Image (tube, rainbow over the protein chains, first blue to last red):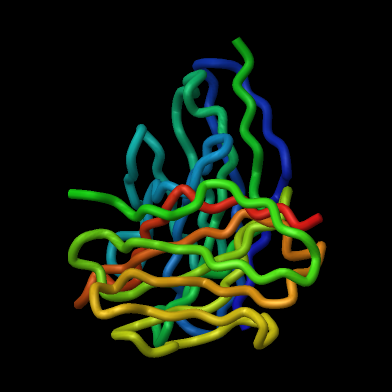
Length: 114
Length: 114
């Protein structure tokens, strides 16, 4: 079975500061990894994904994430936070097989301070 | 290109009733997955439909059922509603072919069971 742990249910940073949202996964097969963002009262928007190949993945809105197999991690970063980044962020894993269902973490709420 | 759409946006039902939620997949996508997101939680996989057949199911009871139509739109039906069924229900579609692992989400239907 696969699982995702997001460390920190709530992260608060100042505008212009580094954003770091942590995600650790468990998977018995090579994982596919995803980060989604959810704005209030909306669905999920894909930020970026890792399937195979380059372990540093760049996404939309200046976000990037690095797949580290040895640490079973897929942390999300952004060099400089913007007020519009305030949202809920979800890390998800799939096994890339069959239904390829997504298993999500509990989410991290990102707050940006002016 | 039209994204994933869901209807209705909000719904209020009473315990024991039945509900049908609808989803139109993104153009060119032949796979639809449904997720339940309880308040403050990450989404949980309910089931997936591929070419009108169920293609995987999560840990949900049989009173959760679905359909996929020839145009790849989908319905989620829930019978004998319980208070714990109150949640945001998310539909996601995936493209055919090699990019099937990526799921694109609709805005969701928020269901309240009283």
